[in-house]
Length: 499
Image 1 (cartoon, helix red, strand yellow):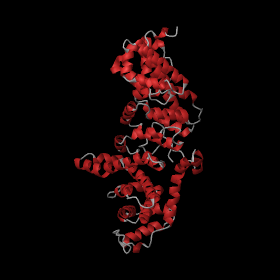
Image 2: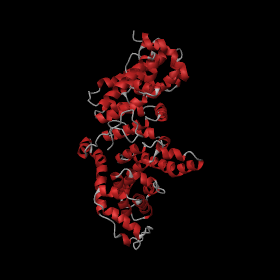
Image 3: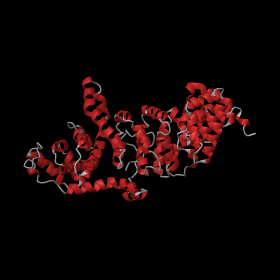
Image 4: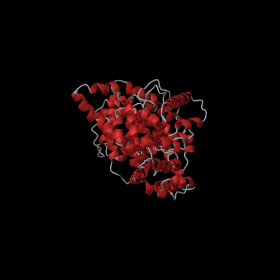
């Protein structure tokens, strides 16, 4: 279900030199599932591979009868003989050797594409999809042969557009095969080949039409499938596809960062989903443009975001592989001052203190690097800058910046950028987190108390109605701070109210 993240010096776009970890056993993955519905998700890929073997044992009818049965496939008897010879081999080693002989690989891959494109019978089409999926599993180099064929992606993308049949399971199974196949083909595209195509105008047009467009269509489909109940296979396919850097643009255009943020909610998603979503973030974190988009996406979110959820994942999940991939992403994010600020504001330094001891050298190295960098960053901030990193993170915690002394001294600084911080505090009154609600009420009350026009500013921003609703909150600390904030908004010389 995914390989171990490589050391940070090795990017996912490098094929060699990266450490990998063995796949967990299916039994382990099943034990990990917390509910019956999650359990179905976990074993789904294993069921698909079992079904693949069953499909391949039940070969279609006699090849020579295809034309008689209405399958206009356009293959010569010599073509069919070559394909039959290939499929008669019982061992993977023999099949690989056969593909490497002469032009056999090119001919076989071309025939598979033609069959999947032209055969309309679903059972037969499913057989050829299963065959290609197994060939690519056995010989990863075969993906490069497919990529040299004419229109190697169209036949598989067309699978996603098959009209719903009476057998929904059949359609879903073929879509999952298409996901697995395309996620092996696109990452196998050679970078030098893509760069060379861009050197001429004609090459650039061909690149757009034959690679970028189908790649973009596939990424959009994966984003859609990752929101479905059975998301593990599409999510794993997305992880593999994002290793092809040209996929990042389409992923970004389709709000992919927000989709990953929703998958990185601990408690709502099982650990394998968290791991694969975290792996996608780790891959994206090598791309500095993606780091800017992660920051921008989080800034647009009022109550949640990718950074908030990935930090929450590290706080709540104990599984080491999940923590490892998250810290691999955090380490790459140190290149962004804005994201360092968000990590500090979300309390990552405090979380690091509570992490269990580990013998994993890579994890220890990444945790140490992140901790040292965030400490240096924090040490260079003024008190007001520390407050800024916290409030913009969207998660408030009880600390020294939430005090009468801080607000008495710094209230005038909040006039910057049209009271940006105060607007953010008003947004945080919709948070679901008790500490954030409590501190937001306290801070707005203190701003109203100390700033000359604080009461009017807070009221005009619509905070009063939100705070009044929080007076009925089930958490006593939140309700108390909401009551005190209303008093500060309505009464001058509030400090003398209780005397």
